[in-house]
Length: 210
Image 1 (cartoon, rainbow, N blue to C red):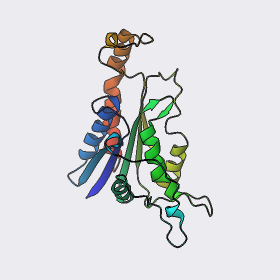
Image 2 (cartoon, rainbow, N blue to C red; image 1 turned 90 degrees about the horizontal axis):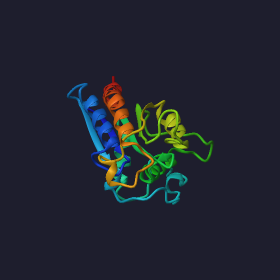
Image 3 (cartoon, rainbow, N blue to C red; image 1 turned 45 degrees about the vertical axis):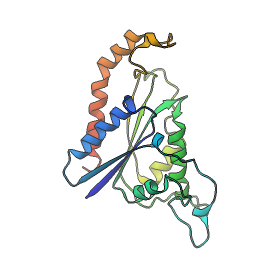
């Protein structure tokens, strides 16, 4: 049995990021009955970013899995043994959500050696990065996963990436102070691109262990 873990860094259970990740899960499961897919929503967990306790750097006890104990601990231990990892987040102020950033600190800091500055994960594996944003391909300020993507690439391998642009934030724009957006233009973009984005997510999930 091979296992893929999907990390949803978005706050809303039924919106763009969640739907793309669901399609990735469906794609992975379509490969065969020997594939287990587990989805975890970071907003359902109570945890903090790196606590700088340095327990992962203790002489004779160094670890490439975070040693700070909280609700994130079992997940980090699961990821260390997984066969594939999917990370998804909406883009807020040009970057992934605070929950995703805090999670990535806990995931990646133990990989970093302060002896030679190498990055070594417990296990290399396929990685898929999923981003959703309000910006268009021509107009966006996204730094995405930022410097953490370099850590992921170095320690786990070159990731696949899916970016869904110009996503709809709400169902009815008239109910909110969102005058900077055209509901008509938003839904025209969605009609033209959303199904393609979902298909890309499905295909990427299918290719994870292919």
